Image (cartoon, rainbow, N blue to C red; front, side):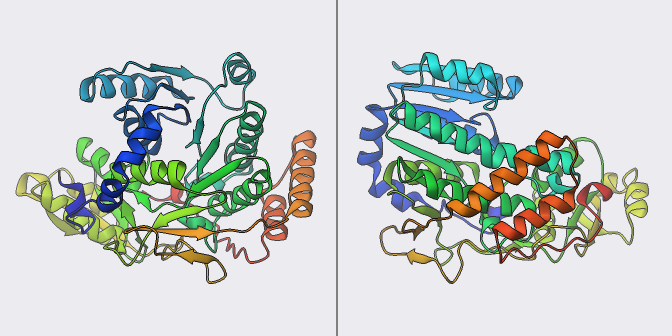
Length: 395
């Protein structure tokens, strides 16, 4: 399957920048040690591969998913083989005592890259998963930054999201608040980040779901009015590596929209996807019709699809990587933009945010409305619209 063609491109986005800085990247990686947190997720695996193939002195990978770590090792051994350096994986939760003990025993790294996140808009559907998203996206990140400072790490990188620019959902807002925490920590540690496009066929994504629907002989569903920017996994790994190794303190990297990255709707991708699989899309009027036709249409070279407009909480009709108030550098790289940030004091907002969240957790009772209100206090421009319907209520 040609993923680039599915998302409307015929070349890798960052190939010129990777070529231009090839020697610098290789020299930095081969003389350095790395810790990759969340390294068995879709983006994390792509980052680990970009580091591994440049022969690092030490590469340790931490992830909560034992199974994904096993597959990562098998994938790397089958693709690249071995390195002389120390390559190990650890099935640990960043928020756990065991992880703290792991850092206490070692923790000696030049670079720490944090790819762990709750990334789904649907994670705000209930107050309990929402609180875990806050812990993972904000507090675990800040904790690992503080540990990096204590251990004398040279550079820290963590992944943000395009949804952090003018956020309309809690996931994007949590990453925007994470950026505020990063700003605070940047006084003591060199930190850079990246705002991402959607990674095509990443675990749990709608495109990944297309593969599952074909595998399980089920209809394909997609919104017609939601457009997104997409990168392939290799590009995701390259974007993180470039930001980590070449980014200056407080830099936020993002794909340059003027260099071949176009918005495309999920419905259009679904059509391209099915055609590559050898099927003609058959548009249905309802979920039930699509379910009924799945037993007969594939034998005719057709696949039932149900395309609708989006009506769920947190969906943004389009994506953007920066706001009009941010300082943008589009000159340094061929296919990358960089948001240049001066230090901005948000300590009062951060202290208030921490205080309220801690009070809610200590009470062991909280409502989603309380957290939404706190987010709006922390991010005055946060425009969250509660529609009362979430992705889990749709096929």
